Length: 161
Image 1 (tube, rainbow, N blue to C red):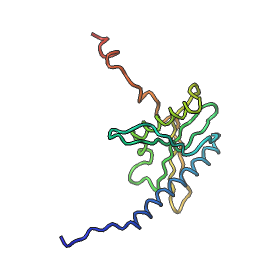
Image 2 (tube, one colour):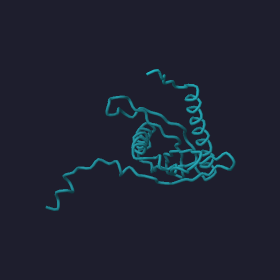
Image 3 (spheres, one colour):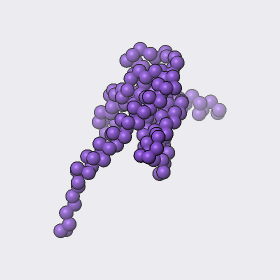
Image 4 (cartoon, rainbow, N blue to C red):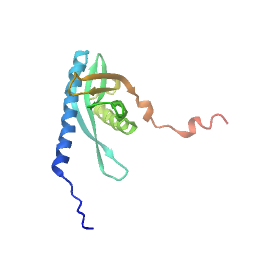
C-alpha cells in the first residue's frame, strides 16, 4: 500500500466552474431566444424548498426560467451542452427532474396566486460548440402534471369485476 491516492481539487474546481459557466451562458442564450420568439421572461432561477427526500434531507427545487407565452405561464428547463455526441441534451430532463420542476411550479403558482392561470412545462436545449453559432431548440409541453397525479388504485382496477 505504498501508493497514495490524491485528488487534484484545483482541477475539480475548474471543471465545476466550467459547467456552471456553461449553464449560465445557456440560460442567457435561452432567455434571449425566448424573448425573440414572443415570450416575456418573468423570472430566472426561481428556487424554493419543496420538501424532503427519502433520507429526510431538505430538497430545493429550481425552475430555470418562468415566462409568459401569451396568457400561458411557462416553466422552462434549460439544458446546455458542448455537444450531443453521447446523448441528446433533452434526455437530461428525466422523470426525477420533471417531478422536481412540477413541485416547484406548484409552489410558485401558490405563492403568486396564479393557480387558475393556464401553464405548461417547456424545455430549451442549447448546444454551444466552440467554432459555431449556438444551436437552440424549444420543446413546448414536454410533460404535463397528469404524469404525477395521485391515482386511487381502487377506482378503476376493480370496476370491471
